[in-house]
Image (cartoon, rainbow, N blue to C red):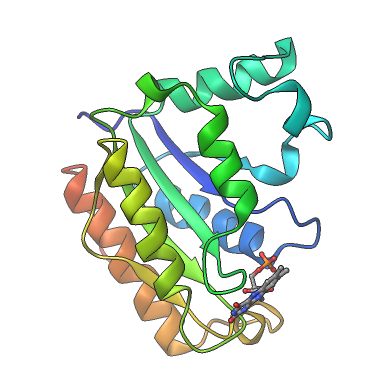
Length: 183
Ligand SMILES: Cc1cc2nc3c(=O)[nH]c(=O)nc-3n(C[C@H](O)[C@H](O)[C@H](O)COP(=O)(O)O)c2cc1C
């Protein structure tokens, strides 16, 4: 893996999603650490996705998404907790992709929640699915409990800041990139 092609995936299609803000923060922090990354949010899924893009069916517009997923070598999944797991739309998204895009890729996971667990269980569930698809998942997983507290104010609490820095450093190490001082 040379890690040239990194895709941050925000794993919900909820329109007012706070996870998407967190995913954007990751893109900025990775960029600041010298790791350019693209962003895909499941809010961009076509409205008729369930009918038009599943089980081998593909619209021309969605081909670009499949191609971005196929070309990425490293995924950072930013994943909200929905009912004690990762969102169902995230599993549908995975099921819509051709199986062969996954094998040999690497992923890292960040979990977010309103409650106090930062989607620990949901990341376990997603980890199991990705391992089944022969994706290597980095062992360090970031958790952002009480996400509203973090994002509805204009500052990052110290624990969230520490988590973010550790995570970016962990990704940089996996990609064998030196991390800029202070990032
Ligand atoms: C359908 C749904 C189920 C949820 N279930 C949980 C949950 O089980 N535990 C929790 O801590 N937060 C739960 N939440 C709150 C989200 O984790 C919270 O909204 C957080 O901001 C991230 O989700 P968002 O990107 O949709 O904003 C749920 C939210 C939704 C929309």
